[in-house]
Image (tube, rainbow, N blue to C red; front, side):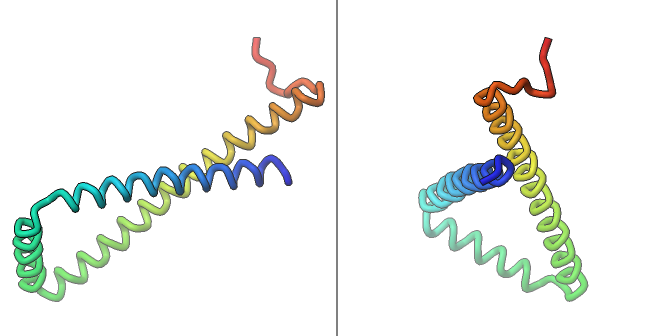
Length: 107
């Protein structure tokens, strides 16, 4: 298995673990809120969304799609940078273990 593939796998696992921790912490915060306050807030939100006109709904859908693209792009950039960094570290470790000097020599 190449170092690039190892880097991508390690990067994916690390990002999944981070995302899992974030989602779990959000779940715990929601569980701590009072049920009545949560239901009251959801009722207000439902009434507000129901009162919107169709153009406002279309605009909010477009905003949600745009935000989704931006968030996905951000995760993709973080994933690629992490995979590149891990592959770079693995390449250097492999070249050192073989006795070959890395092309980037620090002074």
